[in-house]
Image (cartoon, rainbow, N blue to C red):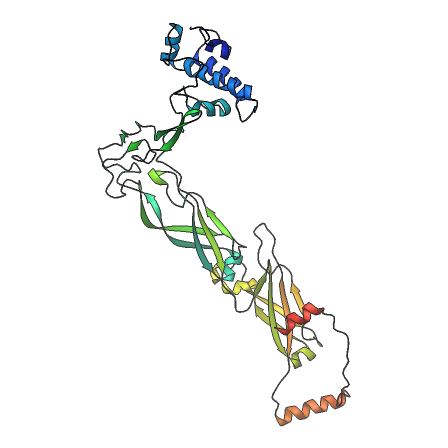
Length: 391
C-alpha cells in the first residue's frame, strides 16, 4: 500500500480474511450512515465516496487480489473517485439486494405459464326462475388448453431454447455513467420478451401460446333468490392461462326480465288486483295465480301453491292492501318474502238505462243524491305529491 492511501479493510472495518458476505454487510451499514440522501454533511459525503471505493475493491476478486499484493487495482491513487462503481451496489445497501459487484441481480425470467383471466357472461332469466332457481346450459367462447402441445407452445418433438441474448436471465443490463459511477438498470430482454427462452418452432395450432379459442357448453345452476346484478361464480371455468396455466373463474351475471303481473321489491312481491265496485261493496272471494303458476307443473312440489284465495271484505276501499305471508321470493340465505296485494276498485264508465236507474235508486236509499264530500288535509309531503304528479 502506497503512502497516503487509505486501507479499504480499515475503512469497512473488516478483517483481511473476511468473506464476501461480511464485506457486503459492513458496506451496507456504512452506506446507510454516510449516503448524501441521509447525511447532508460534506464530510459524510467524502466518507461515503471512500467507503464506496473501498467496497469496489474488496467486492471484486481481481482488484482485491491486486491490492493485497501491494499493487494499484486502478492504476492510480486510492483516494480518487471510483471509475467502475455500480449503482446496483448502492441499491443493495439500502434494499438488501443480492449479488456481487459488477453483476446485476434482477427478478429473473418471467414464467410462460400464468393464470388465465376471469370471464363474465350475462344470463337472462324470468322472475319465476330467479325466485325458485333454475339449471341452464350456457355456450361459452373462451381460451382452452391446446390439445396439440398441451400448453407447452412448442411443436411436437421440440423444446424452447435458451435465449442467446440474455443467456436465460430474461433481463439485460443497461449501463450509464453518472457522478456516482456506473448506473446499471435491468430491462426485460427484447429478444425473448423476458421469458429467458425462445420457442424456435412454435405449435401450429396455438402459435406458441399454449391455448386456443373454443366454444364449449357448461351447465350452471342458478340458486333460488337471485336478482338482477347477482353474479354466480364458476371456479376455474374462465380463460385458460398462457402456457397452459390454470384457468380463471367464470362469472354469470343475472338479468331478470320484467314480469307482467308481479313486481319485486327485495324478497317481497307486489301486485294489483282490480275489482268492480259491486264486489268491493258486497264482498267476494277470488282465486288468483301465484308466481309458482309460471313454473312447469312437474317443478311445483305443492300444486296448491300455484294459486291463492283472495277474500274481498264488504266495503273494501280502493288502495287497500292484503299481505300473504311467505308467498314472495325465497331469500338466498333462507326465509321467504311476502306477497302484497293492492286492491283497486273500478268505477264503471258506461251504464245502460236500467243500470243507471238502479244506481239512482241506491243513491236515493242511501241519501246520496247530492253528496257533500269530505275534505281533509293531504298526508303526503311535497316530494310525495311531486312523485304522484308523474305517475
